[in-house]
Image 1 (cartoon, rainbow, N blue to C red):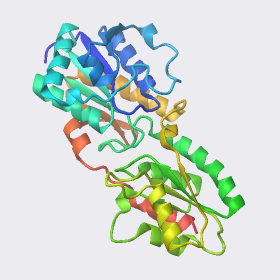
Image 2 (image 1 turned 120 degrees about the vertical axis):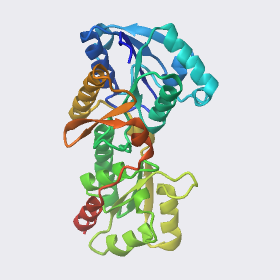
Image 3 (image 1 turned 90 degrees about the vertical axis):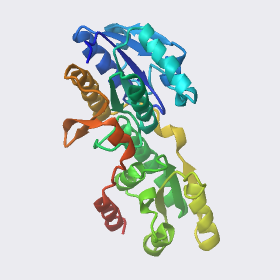
Length: 328
């Protein structure tokens, strides 16, 4: 692999708290090693449009505590085309970028893999998504902060649920992965979580009604992963079913939406992002390429991007039992 003198860094897809801590760590680690850092604004679209500036150490000062991403982010349909990726690579050559560090989720890292395979450029991925759905890492940047945000919101909703003897369906993000719903339900003491991984022959709503709504509990909180692409699922779907099938219950819906993405990153997310950002530069120094830097059992690991984006991350089934037992 050719000697690295300049790296590019971008954030793509949905923003996640801790992305700025990762940008800071990548930038300063690269500069410490004598490399130049080219910051790419607005993700893959910014790479196509040549929104690229050089970062210094001071460029990332006072950013570790900020939510969102100072590099901005965008979704790019143009990058999905070969012509778009050709434009992106032309700008990589224009700025003499020898390797890329990409911070984002499944779609962002898939794009990185595509670019790397077509143009033979080393790419290191950092898992930046609140959904925690990338294979090979115990946690993703932003997940812990989002989990704490949901917990805080549900704590407040509980006061109203108790006051009015209601069932509240609280919808959280994670269309294809139930990590946020499952773990926020445990943390907030919810009565149930309805998650994509639970879509079996068992009707999750009927199961909840059967065991979770009793005379001893006049109010209940149910955490629901957002609706599927076919329109089924989601808080509104299940609330409507209750109104039709169990009209004796008073039902309300709260959709947290983008509230979950914002806010100051937790200490855990700042530390995780800093460790992964530092490790991305170490990976490049070691000659690694086309890997995602993750964490398993509190140890840094390198996972092939192809595996990280294609393999399903299993949910901890024993936590479903924990929730079921503790919600009685």
